[in-house]
Length: 459
Image 1: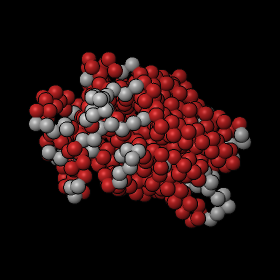
Image 2 (image 1 turned 60 degrees about the vertical axis):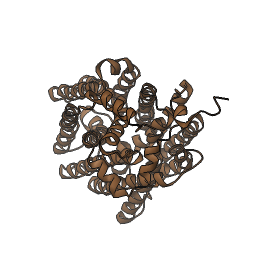
Image 3 (image 1 turned 180 degrees about the horizontal axis):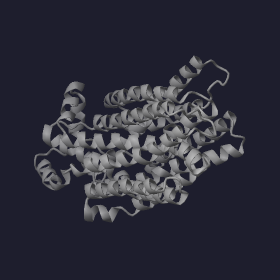
């Protein structure tokens, strides 16, 4: 009888099972299928397969990312208003499963004989439908699910470690398999469509696994109360949260790195290292160490702290680029640098969402307003803007360098590719390290949580 009358707070303290952690991670494996396509490969498809201007593609990416950033805020607001028997975040995983697969395939159905204006419109509409609307309405609610599954801090950290160790798998498979598979299928548009269709079906199955294998248990009264506040008041509360601003800056910079690395690596592999399929090997070299390090991260978090690990990782990732500065044309150095970047990137990826949950608590403590869904959505706004700025800048710089999408490129274009891939990535990791250096929340976190508990703020 006592089990039947357990409170919401008690249910929230339940630790999740291994199967539920894996099920949650499957959602990010699915999300990374489209992320891998849209953060790098789709640009290569437009320029080198469909012969669309790199500058035009870059401009579309920039405009799309700005729309995408605003859509994150919109979805955050809608999530606060829409209630479902399936949960606050989990319901959206179900609702977006089919649209996710359909819009991903549509990206590569660009009419080859259409005019330049018609192609530009098609790219803009399908890219925004896929990333701005569907992907946002899927990924943002998915991200908010973890703190709704348990209130146990250690279990929440494990959930996110499972998620982030599984997350690169979708990216790894797409990045490693796509170009070799497409090349062997003829390398034309039809091959791209067929391969993406297979990815879409697999991703939809994984999303359903995530939906049916997870459960939301936590319902903070303070978060429910905050939903009734005007949007302006919640945004004002976010602005007073200094650690939210620090983390948004760090994730924005990470998005610049991911777009830069994902997009330019294809050109770097083809024009500097000698073959576009080296892109697949470089991604394996970066993602496999990242997965391994995240999987063993838990004991190091307890010993060294989330911030210290993220800071050390950023320094390692920046140092990796020094190898390429010495020998930019050497494939062995490129592999070693990629592996070091994966090792360095792992701590940040492993703790970023747990740190975001900490930041939500800090904001609640400082302002008295628990801004939950909007915090996650505003965080991703920074990532979307960062990715958009990077995509636009890459397109502009490549266009100005004389890039034409041909197999043999002029020296100025090759130099631009080297500069973006080597020095651009180095600068982003230095900036992330500076943001992490200024993050001091962990020093006061235990005192803060004890104070919140004594005041009944965690109900």
